[in-house]
Image 1: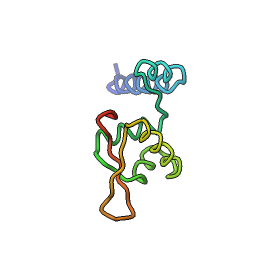
Image 2: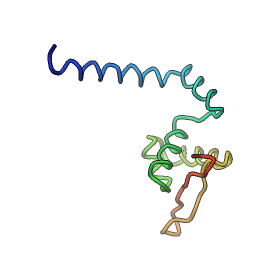
Image 3: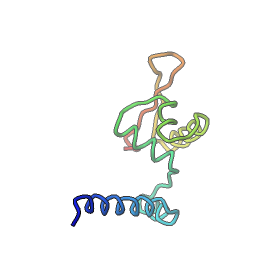
Image 4: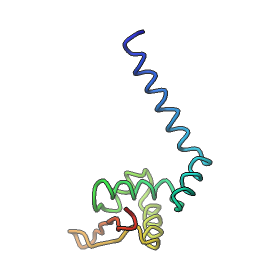
Length: 104
């Protein structure tokens, strides 16, 4: 067996699993099992905040690949659900977003 064949098989398996995970039916099953419906940007926010601590809106927008206005709407929804909170940043104009206990 060529040395790169296990790597190629692993890469193929990764492609299949990530493609499967993003299918709408699979996403709906996962959301139903979790008891919470989150959009892809919302999942990115919760994951990023959980792993990295408080971040600015622009950083979260970049991580999710959306514009700041889309991220602001996402954060408003997450805030209303009690999953994130806003706190003043070091710069008075900046706001940092934190994950709450419920968000964890």
